[in-house]
Structures are given as structure tokens and as C-alpha cells.
Length: 312
Image 1 (cartoon, one colour):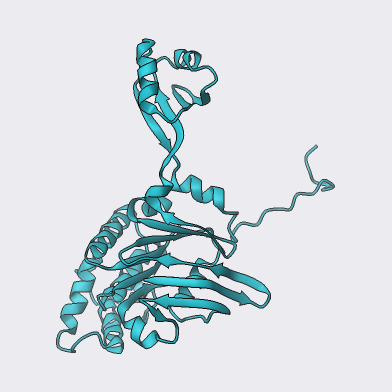
Image 2 (cartoon, rainbow, N blue to C red):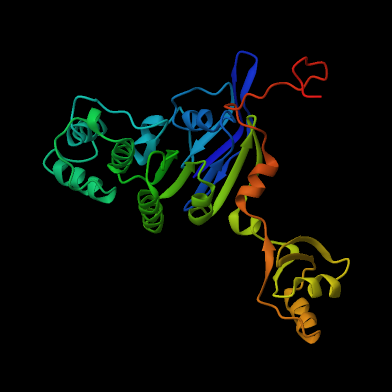
């Protein structure tokens, strides 16, 4: 669905995106992750033809971009860097203009298409107030409704949960799953790693413009080779497994062994009470943090041994 080869974008001598090879397959729910300033939005803008690549290749639905943009983009819905709208017009009026410009169907059926899109994003009861008076969450929902007007084969979203409350985030996730089940490929960037973990089937991680990981989420959640044990008598667990306990936090111990069943049998045979026992799996948050540097929105004071205001 999306293929890039050595995709690169330079701003002067600065490599905002550096030889990125994306592989987004038909039907994927693909999470595009990385800290602020890592190049995610620049990649998305290149995919949509909003910014030209310095070098490299882009294919969407088997067609080269941006050369075939007129054929490709009518099949793509997008929400990038927050929803844009005419602030003095109502949400319905904005969607009517977008629908007319996109020529997604007849004028007669336009109100029905707009109504369906608004209902899907939770704005079915929207009134005629101007968009300028919408909350951030309402604007985000309206932007998603605009992306859905074309019944897209591919949906490209940049921080779609921005401004939504917890219920809205759940509704967004459920909608993405519904769209995916109906055949839409989802490509989204997000800082909501817990949501990505629940929604996505595949992830790519970028850091300082480079793609540092791309894999199925199920593969990334493989066991770490350690087992987590909770016991009412953690001291006895530690004594029985001397040398195998790598970490202890209260009644919870992490044991270096790949076989949870065998470990449980050992503890039970020794008469040690076991409340819980499960294979440890690395979280997506831990994985992303281990692969990426601090984001561009963090400005640390450089470490200097000769600082006069340093504490003794």
C-alpha cells in the first residue's frame, strides 16, 4: 500500500528524513512512532505530495508519487498537523466545500454523505455554529469526518487523538478498527503509545530522520526470556532461586528463565505460595524509549565541569 525507497528530505544541509524505507501492507494498521522533530510529519507530507523529496522513491497503491497524485489522492483520506477549516463557516458547510472540491459523488447525495461522516465521528448532532467556536476535540473530529468523505482505501493520520478526551480516544480507536475491518489501510503517527499498542498491527519507529525499527507488533511483544512472579512470601522465592532473580520490587520478582511452567512447578514443589506468574514482555513504550533520543522540544542545559553555578 505504501512503499518508500531511500526517502530523503534535506532542508539545506539538515537531513530531516534520511533514507527511510517504509513497507506498509494492504490492510495494515500501521503506527508511525518517534519523538518530536524525528521526521514523522515530514514523511507524511511527502507521502501526500505536500512536500517534495530531495531524493528517493514513493509508491502508494503501486503508483509513483507525486507523479500520479491525481489518480492516487482521491482514494486517500488524510488529517495532517491538525484539521484545517474556514473558521467563520459551520462544520457542515466546510464539509460541503470539501466534498464539492473532491467530486466524491453527486450533489444530490452530498447531505447524506456529510451526515454519515459526521455520525461516524460522533458529530451527528452538530449545530450551525462557526468552527471558530468548536473545541479542539470537535475540530479533530471534524477533520476526521473530512478524511472519511471519500470512503478512502488508505487513511493517513497525524496525531488523530489530539484534543480528544479518554472516551473520544476510545471511540477513535473503535472507528479505526471498524474501518480496517471494512478494508481501509490505516497509517497513523501518534505519541499515544498505549493506544497504538491496542490498535496497530505493525509499527515503524523513526529517530533523527532515520527508520530504526519496522516490524509486526506481535513480534515485538515476544517474551523477553524472563518471568514475573508475585508471591506472599517473596523472601522464600528469592532464597529458592538464588542467582536467578534479576530484580525485586516488594512482592514481585523478575526471574531469568524462559520456562514459566517449569518455574511454577519448582516453586509449588518447594511449598512456596505463588499468587501470579507470567512471562515478561517488553512494552511498546519501553521499546520506543530504548530506540530513540530526546525530542526536539526538549532543551537541556549542556553539562560543563567548569560551570560557576554548579552545585559542589
